[in-house]
Length: 285
Image (cartoon, rainbow, N blue to C red; front, side, top):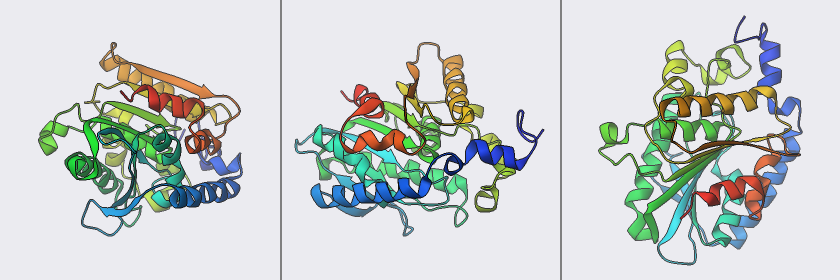
Protein backbone atom coordinates (compact mmCIF):
# COMPACT_ATOMS: atom_id res chain seq x y z
CA UNK A 1 0.00 0.00 0.00
CA UNK A 2 1.17 3.55 -0.73
CA UNK A 3 -1.20 5.22 1.73
CA UNK A 4 -3.94 3.57 3.78
CA UNK A 5 -5.92 1.41 1.30
CA UNK A 6 -4.45 3.05 -1.80
CA UNK A 7 -2.20 0.86 -3.95
CA UNK A 8 -1.57 3.18 -6.89
CA UNK A 9 -0.91 6.83 -7.63
CA UNK A 10 -3.99 6.82 -9.87
CA UNK A 11 -6.21 5.90 -6.91
CA UNK A 12 -4.68 8.61 -4.73
CA UNK A 13 -5.03 11.17 -7.51
CA UNK A 14 -8.70 10.32 -7.97
CA UNK A 15 -9.35 10.82 -4.27
CA UNK A 16 -7.36 14.04 -3.95
CA UNK A 17 -7.74 15.83 -7.30
CA UNK A 18 -11.11 17.64 -7.14
CA UNK A 19 -10.94 18.52 -10.83
CA UNK A 20 -11.42 14.84 -11.64
CA UNK A 21 -14.96 14.95 -10.24
CA UNK A 22 -15.93 18.64 -10.65
CA UNK A 23 -15.30 21.34 -13.26
CA UNK A 24 -12.31 23.14 -11.80
CA UNK A 25 -11.84 25.43 -14.81
CA UNK A 26 -15.42 26.69 -14.59
CA UNK A 27 -15.02 27.16 -10.85
CA UNK A 28 -11.88 29.28 -11.31
CA UNK A 29 -13.66 31.46 -13.88
CA UNK A 30 -16.52 31.91 -11.41
CA UNK A 31 -14.11 32.79 -8.58
CA UNK A 32 -12.35 35.35 -10.76
CA UNK A 33 -15.60 37.01 -11.80
CA UNK A 34 -16.87 37.25 -8.22
CA UNK A 35 -13.49 38.53 -7.03
CA UNK A 36 -13.24 41.20 -9.73
CA UNK A 37 -16.65 42.50 -8.69
CA UNK A 38 -15.71 42.42 -4.99
CA UNK A 39 -12.52 44.39 -5.70
CA UNK A 40 -14.55 46.96 -7.64
CA UNK A 41 -17.41 47.26 -5.14
CA UNK A 42 -15.67 47.12 -1.77
CA UNK A 43 -13.22 49.50 -0.16
CA UNK A 44 -9.85 47.74 -0.24
CA UNK A 45 -6.29 48.43 0.81
CA UNK A 46 -4.54 46.27 -1.76
CA UNK A 47 -1.12 44.66 -1.74
CA UNK A 48 -0.16 45.54 1.83
CA UNK A 49 3.28 44.06 2.42
CA UNK A 50 3.69 41.97 5.57
CA UNK A 51 7.01 40.29 4.70
CA UNK A 52 10.17 40.87 2.73
CA UNK A 53 9.60 38.68 -0.33
CA UNK A 54 7.40 39.86 -3.21
CA UNK A 55 4.55 37.35 -2.68
CA UNK A 56 4.12 38.27 1.01
CA UNK A 57 1.20 40.65 0.60
CA UNK A 58 -2.44 40.81 1.59
CA UNK A 59 -5.56 42.71 0.62
CA UNK A 60 -7.45 44.30 3.51
CA UNK A 61 -11.15 45.02 3.22
CA UNK A 62 -12.10 47.32 6.13
CA UNK A 63 -15.43 47.16 7.90
CA UNK A 64 -17.47 50.33 8.18
CA UNK A 65 -17.32 50.42 11.98
CA UNK A 66 -14.02 51.28 13.68
CA UNK A 67 -12.89 48.57 16.07
CA UNK A 68 -14.70 45.82 14.15
CA UNK A 69 -13.44 42.24 14.41
CA UNK A 70 -10.90 40.97 11.86
CA UNK A 71 -11.24 37.78 9.85
CA UNK A 72 -8.22 36.39 7.99
CA UNK A 73 -8.73 34.13 4.96
CA UNK A 74 -6.07 31.84 3.43
CA UNK A 75 -6.61 30.72 -0.17
CA UNK A 76 -6.36 27.27 -1.71
CA UNK A 77 -4.54 25.95 -4.76
CA UNK A 78 -2.77 22.92 -3.27
CA UNK A 79 0.11 25.12 -2.10
CA UNK A 80 1.38 25.38 -5.68
CA UNK A 81 -1.05 27.61 -7.59
CA UNK A 82 -3.45 30.58 -7.41
CA UNK A 83 -3.17 33.71 -5.27
CA UNK A 84 -5.26 35.81 -2.95
CA UNK A 85 -6.61 37.76 -5.97
CA UNK A 86 -8.85 34.88 -7.08
CA UNK A 87 -10.38 34.77 -3.60
CA UNK A 88 -11.27 38.42 -2.95
CA UNK A 89 -14.92 37.36 -3.10
CA UNK A 90 -14.44 35.62 0.25
CA UNK A 91 -14.48 39.07 1.87
CA UNK A 92 -17.79 40.39 0.54
CA UNK A 93 -20.33 38.76 2.84
CA UNK A 94 -18.22 39.33 5.94
CA UNK A 95 -17.57 43.00 5.14
CA UNK A 96 -21.30 43.48 4.61
CA UNK A 97 -21.74 41.95 8.10
CA UNK A 98 -19.37 44.67 9.41
CA UNK A 99 -16.27 42.48 9.76
CA UNK A 100 -12.88 43.59 8.44
CA UNK A 101 -11.31 40.92 6.23
CA UNK A 102 -7.72 40.23 5.18
CA UNK A 103 -7.17 37.87 2.24
CA UNK A 104 -3.57 36.67 2.46
CA UNK A 105 -1.12 35.85 -0.32
CA UNK A 106 1.97 33.64 0.09
CA UNK A 107 4.82 32.22 -1.98
CA UNK A 108 4.08 28.94 -3.74
CA UNK A 109 5.83 25.58 -3.93
CA UNK A 110 8.32 24.71 -5.36
CA UNK A 111 9.74 28.26 -5.30
CA UNK A 112 9.63 27.87 -1.51
CA UNK A 113 9.30 24.85 0.75
CA UNK A 114 6.00 24.09 2.42
CA UNK A 115 7.61 24.96 5.75
CA UNK A 116 8.50 28.43 4.46
CA UNK A 117 4.98 28.86 3.10
CA UNK A 118 3.58 28.13 6.56
CA UNK A 119 6.03 30.55 8.16
CA UNK A 120 4.86 33.32 5.85
CA UNK A 121 1.27 32.72 6.88
CA UNK A 122 2.25 32.84 10.56
CA UNK A 123 3.99 36.16 9.97
CA UNK A 124 0.93 37.55 8.17
CA UNK A 125 -1.15 36.96 11.27
CA UNK A 126 1.42 38.61 13.54
CA UNK A 127 1.67 41.59 11.19
CA UNK A 128 -2.09 42.01 11.16
CA UNK A 129 -2.25 41.90 14.95
CA UNK A 130 0.43 44.57 15.15
CA UNK A 131 -1.22 46.84 12.56
CA UNK A 132 -4.67 46.91 14.17
CA UNK A 133 -4.45 50.50 15.42
CA UNK A 134 -3.40 51.75 11.98
CA UNK A 135 -6.19 49.98 10.11
CA UNK A 136 -9.01 50.25 12.63
CA UNK A 137 -9.91 46.68 13.61
CA UNK A 138 -9.80 44.92 16.99
CA UNK A 139 -6.67 42.76 17.56
CA UNK A 140 -8.49 40.94 20.35
CA UNK A 141 -11.11 39.61 17.91
CA UNK A 142 -9.13 37.85 15.18
CA UNK A 143 -10.56 34.72 13.55
CA UNK A 144 -9.18 32.69 10.65
CA UNK A 145 -10.39 30.45 7.85
CA UNK A 146 -8.94 28.74 4.82
CA UNK A 147 -10.03 26.62 1.90
CA UNK A 148 -8.33 23.37 0.79
CA UNK A 149 -4.58 24.11 1.17
CA UNK A 150 -5.76 27.10 3.18
CA UNK A 151 -7.50 24.66 5.52
CA UNK A 152 -4.13 22.99 6.08
CA UNK A 153 -2.66 26.43 6.84
CA UNK A 154 -5.38 26.98 9.43
CA UNK A 155 -4.40 23.68 11.06
CA UNK A 156 -0.76 24.73 11.12
CA UNK A 157 -1.66 28.08 12.69
CA UNK A 158 -3.46 26.17 15.44
CA UNK A 159 -0.31 24.06 15.90
CA UNK A 160 2.01 27.07 16.11
CA UNK A 161 3.90 27.66 19.35
CA UNK A 162 3.08 31.35 19.32
CA UNK A 163 4.74 31.97 22.68
CA UNK A 164 7.89 29.94 22.06
CA UNK A 165 8.50 31.07 18.47
CA UNK A 166 7.25 34.63 18.52
CA UNK A 167 6.70 35.65 22.13
CA UNK A 168 2.96 36.02 21.55
CA UNK A 169 -0.07 34.85 23.47
CA UNK A 170 -1.49 31.50 22.29
CA UNK A 171 -4.97 33.06 22.28
CA UNK A 172 -4.14 35.27 19.29
CA UNK A 173 -6.73 33.29 17.28
CA UNK A 174 -10.26 33.37 18.69
CA UNK A 175 -11.87 30.96 16.24
CA UNK A 176 -10.92 28.87 13.19
CA UNK A 177 -12.83 27.45 10.22
CA UNK A 178 -11.07 24.99 7.89
CA UNK A 179 -12.98 24.27 4.67
CA UNK A 180 -12.14 21.10 2.74
CA UNK A 181 -8.88 21.04 4.66
CA UNK A 182 -5.90 18.70 4.25
CA UNK A 183 -4.50 17.73 7.62
CA UNK A 184 -2.47 14.61 6.82
CA UNK A 185 0.16 15.13 4.12
CA UNK A 186 1.10 11.44 3.89
CA UNK A 187 -0.69 10.71 0.57
CA UNK A 188 0.85 13.59 -1.34
CA UNK A 189 4.41 12.29 -1.90
CA UNK A 190 2.72 9.51 -3.93
CA UNK A 191 0.46 11.87 -5.87
CA UNK A 192 0.38 14.14 -8.92
CA UNK A 193 1.37 17.00 -6.58
CA UNK A 194 4.80 15.73 -5.55
CA UNK A 195 6.82 17.30 -8.41
CA UNK A 196 5.63 20.71 -7.21
CA UNK A 197 5.52 20.08 -3.45
CA UNK A 198 8.73 18.03 -3.15
CA UNK A 199 7.69 16.78 0.28
CA UNK A 200 10.15 14.87 2.43
CA UNK A 201 9.33 12.30 5.08
CA UNK A 202 10.19 14.92 7.68
CA UNK A 203 7.74 17.35 6.07
CA UNK A 204 4.96 14.78 6.37
CA UNK A 205 5.68 14.32 10.08
CA UNK A 206 6.18 17.98 11.04
CA UNK A 207 3.72 19.75 8.74
CA UNK A 208 0.68 17.49 9.10
CA UNK A 209 -1.70 18.97 11.70
CA UNK A 210 -2.97 15.47 12.59
CA UNK A 211 0.57 14.39 13.48
CA UNK A 212 1.63 17.32 15.66
CA UNK A 213 0.41 18.99 18.81
CA UNK A 214 -2.30 21.61 18.60
CA UNK A 215 -1.42 24.64 20.73
CA UNK A 216 -4.45 26.90 20.24
CA UNK A 217 -7.61 25.87 22.05
CA UNK A 218 -10.11 28.10 20.24
CA UNK A 219 -13.38 26.79 18.77
CA UNK A 220 -12.83 25.04 15.42
CA UNK A 221 -15.28 24.34 12.59
CA UNK A 222 -14.34 21.80 9.91
CA UNK A 223 -16.55 22.05 6.83
CA UNK A 224 -16.59 19.80 3.73
CA UNK A 225 -18.81 19.75 0.66
CA UNK A 226 -21.09 16.73 0.65
CA UNK A 227 -20.05 15.91 -2.95
CA UNK A 228 -16.33 15.79 -2.13
CA UNK A 229 -14.44 12.50 -2.00
CA UNK A 230 -14.50 10.25 1.03
CA UNK A 231 -10.89 11.19 1.68
CA UNK A 232 -11.69 14.89 2.07
CA UNK A 233 -14.38 13.97 4.60
CA UNK A 234 -12.04 11.57 6.40
CA UNK A 235 -9.30 14.19 6.64
CA UNK A 236 -11.63 16.48 8.59
CA UNK A 237 -13.04 13.79 10.87
CA UNK A 238 -9.50 12.56 11.62
CA UNK A 239 -8.43 16.07 12.50
CA UNK A 240 -11.46 16.50 14.74
CA UNK A 241 -10.54 13.29 16.57
CA UNK A 242 -6.94 14.50 16.92
CA UNK A 243 -8.01 17.80 18.46
CA UNK A 244 -10.52 16.22 20.82
CA UNK A 245 -8.03 13.56 21.95
CA UNK A 246 -5.83 16.39 23.19
CA UNK A 247 -8.65 18.43 24.70
CA UNK A 248 -12.08 16.85 25.00
CA UNK A 249 -13.54 20.20 26.06
CA UNK A 250 -12.47 22.04 22.91
CA UNK A 251 -15.38 22.90 20.65
CA UNK A 252 -14.63 21.09 17.36
CA UNK A 253 -17.42 20.46 14.86
CA UNK A 254 -17.51 18.79 11.44
CA UNK A 255 -20.18 19.78 8.93
CA UNK A 256 -21.07 18.49 5.48
CA UNK A 257 -22.65 21.00 3.09
CA UNK A 258 -25.38 19.40 0.96
CA UNK A 259 -25.12 19.76 -2.81
CA UNK A 260 -21.64 21.32 -2.75
CA UNK A 261 -18.38 20.10 -4.27
CA UNK A 262 -14.83 21.15 -3.43
CA UNK A 263 -15.20 24.40 -5.34
CA UNK A 264 -18.79 25.49 -4.72
CA UNK A 265 -18.57 24.93 -0.95
CA UNK A 266 -17.21 28.48 -0.45
CA UNK A 267 -19.52 30.30 -2.89
CA UNK A 268 -21.72 31.54 -0.04
CA UNK A 269 -18.92 33.73 1.28
CA UNK A 270 -19.65 36.05 -1.65
CA UNK A 271 -23.16 36.90 -0.50
CA UNK A 272 -23.07 36.07 3.19
CA UNK A 273 -25.07 32.86 2.99
CA UNK A 274 -24.70 29.16 3.70
CA UNK A 275 -23.01 26.91 6.21
CA UNK A 276 -19.44 28.13 5.72
CA UNK A 277 -20.42 31.76 6.24
CA UNK A 278 -22.53 30.81 9.27
CA UNK A 279 -19.68 28.74 10.72
CA UNK A 280 -17.28 31.69 10.50
CA UNK A 281 -19.79 34.11 11.98
CA UNK A 282 -20.38 31.87 15.00
CA UNK A 283 -16.80 32.58 16.11
CA UNK A 284 -17.04 36.35 15.72
CA UNK A 285 -18.01 38.10 18.91
